[in-house]
Length: 121
Image 1 (cartoon, rainbow, N blue to C red):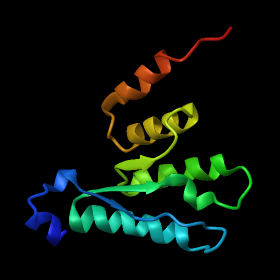
Image 2 (image 1 turned 90 degrees about the horizontal axis):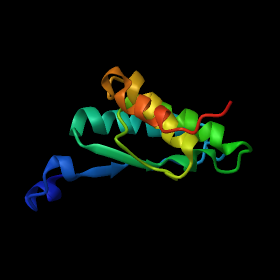
Image 3 (image 1 turned 30 degrees about the vertical axis):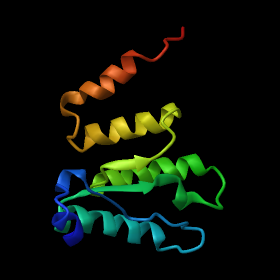
Image 4 (image 1 turned 90 degrees about the vertical axis):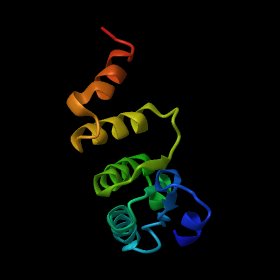
């Protein structure tokens, strides 16, 4: 942070990667990452990012774990996730989480995404 400030980089242009690690290798990795996101958000006041799918490495049905973790990370302050934006369920998870965390007042972005979905009879 000090170096970024010395170089004149504004806080809003800084993202810190809190390094999500595989929970299959370290059962406390998910909790540690969530705590790190919370601390960076509260203490440094800068944005956070992470590779959301790292936590599920080595586990079956990874997408379920990834979406659960992504929601938790958003809850503690995650501002940017390294995810596959072509996976609609990931986009919907982010939109729903933002709505629940008051980052999308009245669900405007969530509803816009819903309205753009193909309708099946």
